[in-house]
Length: 257
Image 1 (tube, rainbow, N blue to C red):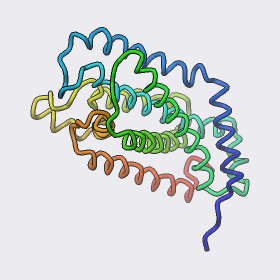
Image 2: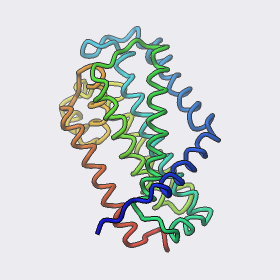
Image 3: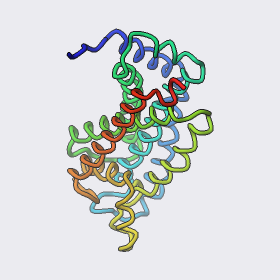
């Protein structure tokens, strides 16, 4: 028998998380926008003028999708992990777990709020980039689909990270030691076609390559890998995260122990 979702519980978690975000709007929104704008100024407006075009696109415009994706990845993981970690740290998570709220409703509330924040951030950065670099979006719906899918996927990954972490240090180690290097090596600032043969093949094992490549295709119609492959890779990672969340709530790992 299918049990209908409790919209009120989802809305309560979602609204609480959004209010918490707006209370720290300078840190949550202004700081990443300002830091990304510096990339646009330095690499787009200054250095970009001296760089040759990449696949017929000016270098300043070429890096716009990569920089947007860089911000979305880091902020999605941060928002998703802190959203669930703070109730664990404060001990209020037991109130949520003991309430008549299902695991699906908890995930929808926390991950939905984290993904919303990331989508809003991505849109603001895209608008801000127009002040520094001239660019166009050839496939707006595909770009929006990638934006939403990436935000949801990595907010869910951040949610898993927040459950796994038992200290603030663990919240930072994966984004700093794993995600950031993968992002910078994932074609945000260059096309992997520029790499020598062996390194080009190694780069294809980097999941961020598929995100950046698909998102860049939505802007200019150019990509390092097929857009279908990019969507499939992102959806596959989302499915893995969903399976992990399902197992965690069934066993209570790191939540009830």
